[in-house]
Image (cartoon, rainbow, N blue to C red; front, top):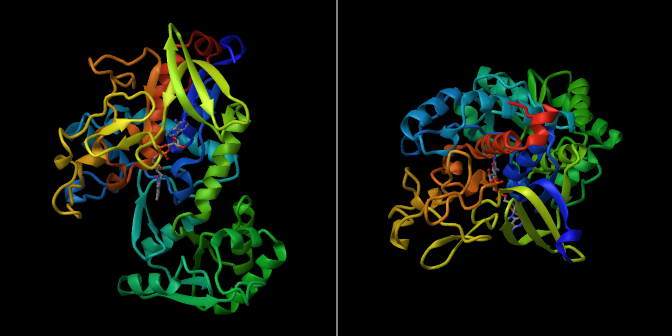
Length: 437
Ligand SMILES: Cc1cc2nc3c(=O)[nH]c(=O)nc-3n(C[C@H](O)[C@H](O)[C@H](O)COP(=O)(O)OP(=O)(O)OC[C@H]3O[C@@H](n4cnc5c(N)ncnc54)[C@H](O)[C@@H]3O)c2cc1C
């Protein structure tokens, strides 16, 4: 295929994890034509909760009630952290835009305030997060006020035990009870999976039979918690039917990965970018990326026929080791696509601390790409590798998103900041006045 046949876009986003999806969404909202290449990334494993920043500094495991106070502390104490380089107003707008898109794609979130929320997990720990799906939000209040509350699980669903949650939390929450029921229609199935049950609950009769089983168990309960399986693509509808049928607030508790909220999140993001006209090459990956003058050419593999696309700007959102954006051999960590320099310890001995559970984490988890102020990854001379190549999300250096509980925040904020730069430098989008922020 020659270049004349290659379709040209304003932006090509490489990667379809949280960062790639956010970049495609924001680019399209700003009026830029966009092609996105790659499959689901870590989204499938996500809980549906959108972390912004909960822990800083990692070594002290200090938890912050307000993610914006945490961001301010991060900016003072660790200015090289990618999240510290996005101003708070942009972070707010980015989250609002992202959540509004999810809500209109059928995965509604509670209004975003200034504070983190506390959410019960499937093992009875409490997770601090920022964006909470509406189906989970009643659990935040139930936990905060230690309301009389009934948790229900299903015989055969191994990934979720209401009893374990109650045993873990009961010392501090005496009014928490649990019950175990058969899932209607699946009574003789020994092993159940959340995604199957979620789909089954989209059948109205199955929902009504489940509600009828739970209702006599309510007693004093002022809220009911269930594993996160209240519908797959119609969760709002199923959740509302449970609240109406039971007559008390109902909340979902995220289950272990791969979780139903992860599936919903991926579905909603796919719908949101499709609705905004993003061209997607889901089953492909970028095999090679070259730059000539002001045009980047991407060679795709994995499609039925070899394809080449061109773009004026490229966003690298290829993730870390699990996403395949970074690879490691015995000596060093490498960036997989362009062999860009990776900021990392001088030798392998520096990758890990002696203690696996070292509270400060490990240097390898902070390895990644260095960028300039415009989110352009640097070459070996410390210069932008290409004028219109941008790097976002977990491939960036100087962050440890798992320990800092900032996975979605890092993805969404850096996607916003990079697309802002791209839109600002694109005369077409400036003219259309679509650049938000
Ligand atoms: C177990 C688990 C739990 C999580 N829980 C939460 C949570 O509770 N709250 C929260 O906020 N976030 C959570 N997350 C999600 C997390 O926020 C994001 O996964 C993280 O921010 C990384 O996103 P990313 O887009 O940078 O990378 P990834 O998700 O790794 O995505 C990288 C993408 O790049 C693609 N790619 C790589 N190379 C190429 C190539 N050459 N061509 C095309 N595509 C390519 C990959 O296929 C993938 O689509 C969780 C993730 C995991 C794994």
